Image 1 (spheres, rainbow, N blue to C red):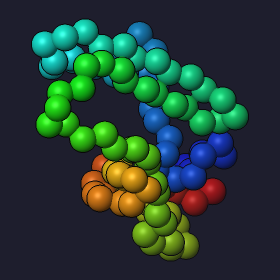
Image 2: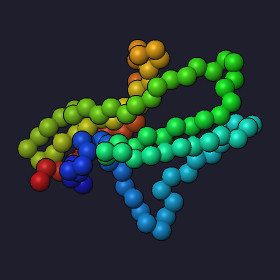
Image 3: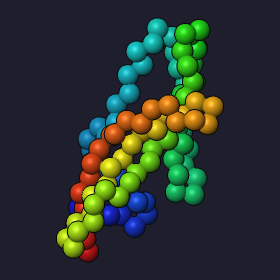
Length: 102
């Protein structure tokens, strides 16, 4: 409803206790390892497993942009950004979030 004080708009999450917040399905034919950590307000998740010869590695990050600001609301877009060798190769919009002003 409101832009949180701990992150910019578009980077927050809803938590519903007693309900499943996130599900992950390994669609590979081999096991993977998921390692996550939180430090200084940033969450990092790494997924390890066997790399097929035709797969490409990407550095993936989430970026947000303020799209529109009115007297009553703020609208943010969140993007998943794929980088290879430091260059952006793809940007995928994840969501458009509208927040009320205080």
